[in-house]
Amino acid sequence: MMRGRTTVAMSVRPPSGEIRTYSEPLPAALARGRLARIPLVRGVLVLYEALVIGTRMLMRSAAIAAEGEDLQVGRGTLAVTMVVSIGLAIGLFFVLPLFLSTFAQRATESDVLANIAEGLIRLAIFIGYIALIGRTGEVRRVFAYHGAEHKAISAHEAQRPLTPEEVDRFGTAHTRCGTTFLLIVVVISIFFFGLIPRAGVPLPLLFLSRVVLIPVIAGVAYELVRFGARHYGNPRVRAIYAPGLWLQALTTRAPDHGMLEVSIASLESCLASDRDSAAASAT
Image (cartoon, rainbow, N blue to C red):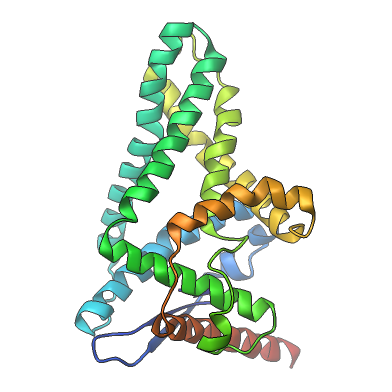
């Protein structure tokens, strides 16, 4: 899946072997809306895009790859999938670390140490989860396509021809990857949650405070990702953001040329839509 300025495109190789590409316009709020240009707010929109559009495209691609038929995901099915997925994510990455950190709070009677412990537990669960699911065959294949996406984007940014041989010269890591975004979310959540006192506060209210702050943390994390990508030539910035690239070693795999062909098809669809939109705006 690739995102352009005006469209999102998905390319899939069904059992029949040919590459099929599907493209749809981005919602106006994401492509041209004023909110998409406001710092911090645009990060929340990107989070929405990743959750809703990404999940829907993933479900469609799975159906096409398995059966060769496009599946138009209904709103009800998508809503149930989103509720279950978000609920599991909140439970694993927010409720569990908060609960486990209460033991540190009781042992030290320190809000600061308890919040640090919560953040470190969250980071350990996050990395462990990625490492664990990456060992399954289907997820490893998804991670290989993730690497193919990065290679294609890097080749385009370097103004190289979009051929499998040329694209394959580039690495699987990219500065604007969602993995880096998630790592930044986990790290800066330690600071944000550390501002909330714990002593005497019921556990349900502490949990609610974590959920409420997620959009704020996502907005800040997105701006930090943009800043890092824009100033990546600076050695200090590159050193600070290096852990995000290291973590991508868990979420990407070396793709084969067939996977590169799929990623190139998706990217070319977005580029063509962007050119058509620019030409239409100029007339």
